[in-house]
Image 1: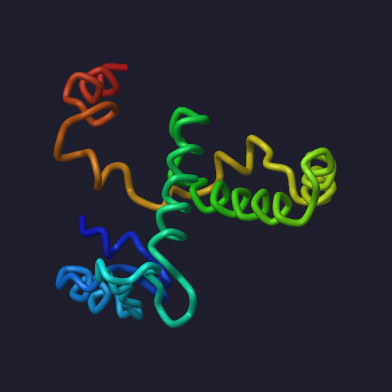
Image 2: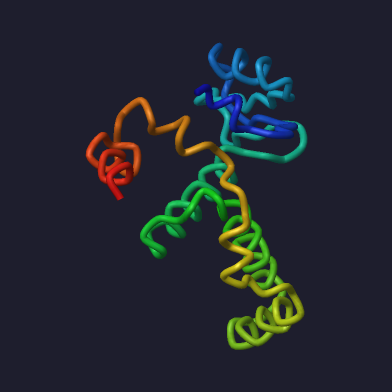
Length: 150
């Protein structure tokens, strides 16, 4: 399955000017903002202010989330990213000793995730489509035979 089939509503791809990024953004029908990577420039910026540094910072934050949580479900990737943005906004607005209280105030009225809601949330990809051909996990021959005999 192509990565493109897994991406919805991509509006902008921030990249250098490599041809494969141009092709990828064309296939996504997304704007490709090129960051000039000339060694003579001190700041690698595009017109709207995005930079390689901001992209690298976001990637570093995502890596930290994955490391702290020992990975996370792709089902909740957007929620992790949304919470990270909220945390950053709180960090920039308030002093360190006020941050935890302000963060709690922001999320206390939001919807709590209940187990039933988690179980009813659809996966963004079909696990059968992704793993069936490898005969892995619940799609292994041994597991399927065991289920048939039960």
